[in-house]
Image (cartoon, rainbow, N blue to C red; front, side, top):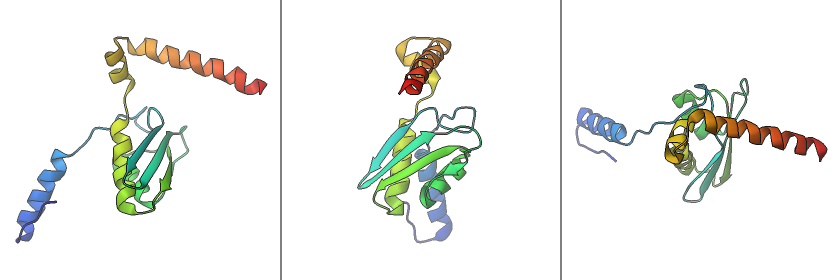
Length: 134
């Protein structure tokens, strides 16, 4: 936490600290997450899920503020455990740090993005008939 006796100096130090701890969050189509993810901080636990277009931000107060600031348009989030806003925000950031883009996953696995996404489509098509039969 940045502290200083004079207000302008405290603001400068806090801004520098914030810039150092910034994270990059990959978004699908610039509006939602790529995959479901879970984050924890202390007793706070959050579950973030990707959502179809038009869903909006379905999340509790502190998490909603984080998503609005990021520019996420469609997401479903559930807070489990504590309702302490500090822990909820920290858990949300912990979850967002785990978010991977298809490009980074493909690079890590040595595949092309198109191959990775075609596998995803194949798995979804196999799961749909199985769900219809049940």
